[in-house]
Length: 204
Image (cartoon, one colour):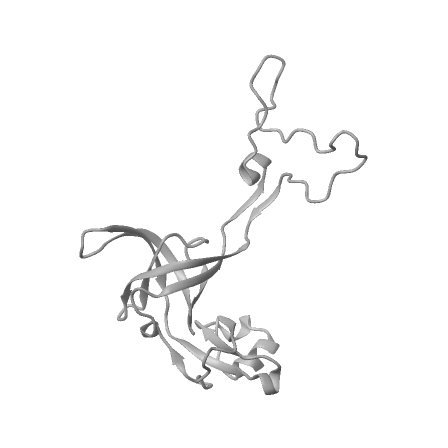
């Protein structure tokens, strides 16, 4: 199992040596440090905790300072291991982008863009009302929510509300190009989130 943390930069196009063009997302994945190794015999599960980036000391809670053991990381993330995964990592080890190779299949998790309060047309893809005779200002209304015979709104009814800001996991993404000198990776396809969003990358 290979994993690393990075930041989404932006999207662009990549032209392969064969002349093919791919839509790619640029991910800046700087080296991370193994801060703790969880073992099933001691902690109840197998996992590796890594620290990413740097942060000022006064912006870190006291509890996090203890977990970071004197260092001031911007993010601490755990990656749980399956029984079939090998666990050779030790505290203090450095993991960089060189562990990945072109062609690796990735599972990428990130937080999607927040879009605020949105109506049903944008949030759920409703068609809205018809622009026929007798209709007025109902092009984007949700329509009936009661169902006729009910005296309450059914649970799970799709309505207007906050949209975005969800954790999105995308599978079967592919590494197209790796720039080890600049700690940059080109991933085929789109990754959820805005520029600067923290990205969790896993390859098994």
